Length: 268
Image (cartoon, rainbow, N blue to C red):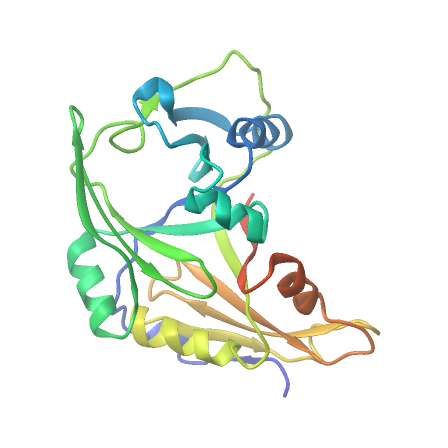
């Protein structure tokens, strides 16, 4: 099969409107160290924090931002906390690709009606700056999508987080916004997850790559790119293909121990 692009992509009606990527959350072994890495290497700015100093006794989270890209780096303290169990199994990695919406409760209900599984029921969080409504659904592997409604909130990030800055001088590299997030899934599961995004979120298949399009002498993969109705969210979904040696997707699945987010691609 050659590369294919849907000719009617622009005519697709948006049945699950998304405003954009709200944040991407990484579960890591050492959130403070990870935050330092992203700040010194990529020039992200520390904007918010939640942890023991703010009254949170089980986890700590550093919120970094550069233009419209917001990263949340989270660690847990108790070795038996589910976050540490996740990190022990997978290593540091993306847990949550959060999506900015106008009606978190309504869109959560629609997603469940269309076949999505719930990760977290709708929750209202409030502080002096207003309220944020969140709900979350499951996608491939142990990845989730939190739906974030923040139209009534003026704080730096979320209730429970405090503004935080640092004297560390960083140099932004020019990151502008999240262009796409790539998911790696098991052989034979690519079409399943493409259909999930089509059925649940009304995404459309923008383009398809087969093993002849993305390959080397030794490794190859297959990929389909799905996008939201307004094209603000794009998710390539990869699965392995046969080659002389193990596909890079198989290597990911082996080392990560399952399906998950391969990479986050910011536009510059």
